[in-house]
Length: 280
Image 1 (cartoon, rainbow, N blue to C red):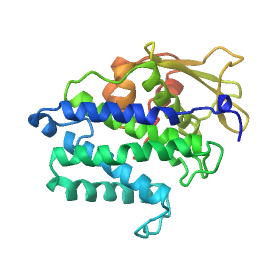
Image 2: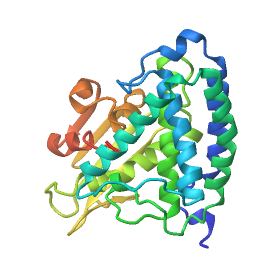
Image 3: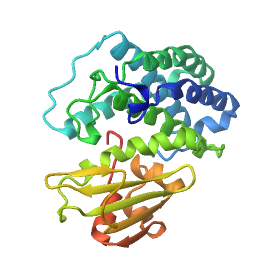
C-alpha cells in the first residue's frame, strides 16, 4: 500500500463523524420538519433520509457482501445508467413512505457504523467496485470511490439542514473534501472544449472552507494542476452557499449566473458552471 500522505483525497476517517452529525440532526427534527421540501425538488426531508438509509444498505449488501440481488438492464450509454439508478432511488423512497421517522432513524443508527467501518477498511489503492462515472473514469481507485460516497452522504445531509434551517456542515474539515472531490469532474467537463495548450482556468469557492482549483490545457487533455505556469485565461468565483447546490444539480447555471463572478474569457469561465459531480 502507498503511504497515506500520498492519497489524493482521503475521506475514510470522516464517515463516522459525519454520520454522528446526521443522527443528531434527525433526532432534533420536529414532526413538521420531516415534510419540508428540499432542493432535491421531488424529495422532502423524510425522502432524503430514506435515500441515505438506502445508501447504507446498498453499501453493506452490494459492496461489502457482493450481493447484487437483481440484474441491471442493458446499459448502452451514460443516461441509461442514470435512468436506472433514478428508478431504483424512486422505488425505494416510495416503498419506505410507510416507515415512520423514528424507525428510519433507528435503521440509520443500526447501519451507519457498519457502513463507516466498511469504508474505513478499504485499501485506497485497490480498484473500486464501481468507477466514478461523472469524473469520466472507466475504473477508479478506492480512494476516489470512497470520496464519491462521502460527497453523497455530505450533500444529502446538507439538503436536510438547508430545508430545516439547521446549521450547515460547511466547515474546512467536512466541506473541503466534498469540493475537492467534485472538482475531479472538471477535466471531464472540459473534454470537448477547445483552447490553446497551456491555457489555465482558475476556479475558487469563496470561503475559508472552500479552495481554489486550476485546470490546465495539455496537448491532448485538460488536467487539474497545483501550480500552473501561466496566468489564468479565466477566473471563476463561486459563493460557497451556491457551490454544492450547483455541482449536485439542484441549481443550474442560468439560476446563479448573476451571483457568480467570471473574469477573463467568459466562454471558458461559464463552462466551469456546467460541471455535475453526481449521477444525474
